[in-house]
Length: 389
Ligand SMILES: *Cc1c(COP(=O)(O)O)cnc(C)c1O
Image 1 (cartoon, rainbow, N blue to C red):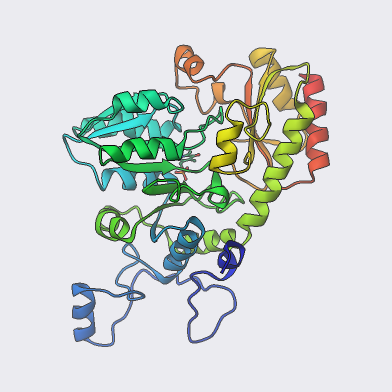
Image 2: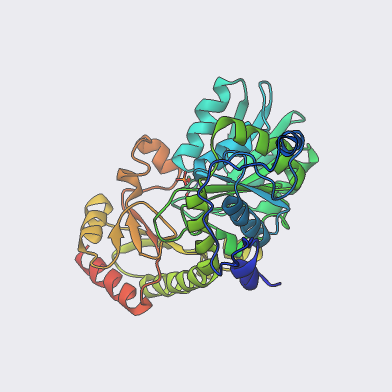
């Protein structure tokens, strides 16, 4: 089956009632036919044999199987949030004395795990500029156990070369863990390109309608079942069956949504390109973007996010946000509703001005997450707000 078909039918498990839509198995436990069956299941539970929802649940399993098919991964483990996925992927495989190399431009909570939590447990972390392969080469050591990066960074949409970093990391035997949220599972070919483990915040494009928090860790069956599952099932970061059902229904439409969002994002980037209120339009789908070639090789499309750097700094950015009539001011992304964020005063407020400057986050930078509204309405809204900026 091709991906669009798998997204509708993949992983489906029907009960004896033959329900058309996937059932929500809102149950934490499972009754056994006999004491012998309970004993056997605790020794070794087979596929579709469940014990307790923290370990696994039929609705959660349907979601894991469907997203694994989309990603082209052998297996997956669904988690309570994107951060439970990042934490689970890293902490389940690391121990005191290990070394990790990570890109510096990270989502705030990812940075907290790598900069604060892992070192507290004796893991040494070296940070590099993710787009610079020479820095990865210099930082990797024989004891490097894992490398971590976001394949497209927030909010400056800088790409990290998955194939390039993976080839380098594998020379020292390190496991490559990619947070692929901004690239989206629709365009991802991360495993084919060398990543060992791919994590998503399912809160973003997978739900795609701003309802639930969730995440998923994808990788080989060996890694998911032997390393991730024992850690997750005993530490409590599993996804709830209700959330898994929302995410399953999200997967049915993700391809249609993300492709529409991407095509509108390109239309917006083209419409505002060269605008006199803008210092810069950042969109990897524009031919003039410095990483356009890498973007074509790695994901093939520019994605659903566009960042605009307003020449007038914070005042102009605030006037722009406040003038928007359709686009909402919020900090989710990948949603059907278009959303605008001012990173310097919200998501990246905690960083010092110097840190923000080193990450390219100016006071005039705004991040747009493009939704599924009519493209003409969005372009008109953005142009009228820019006129007032
Ligand atoms: C949102 C996000 C996360 C965290 O996901 P939650 O579902 O909010 O826990 C991690 N990485 C990236 C790149 C994100 O955008």
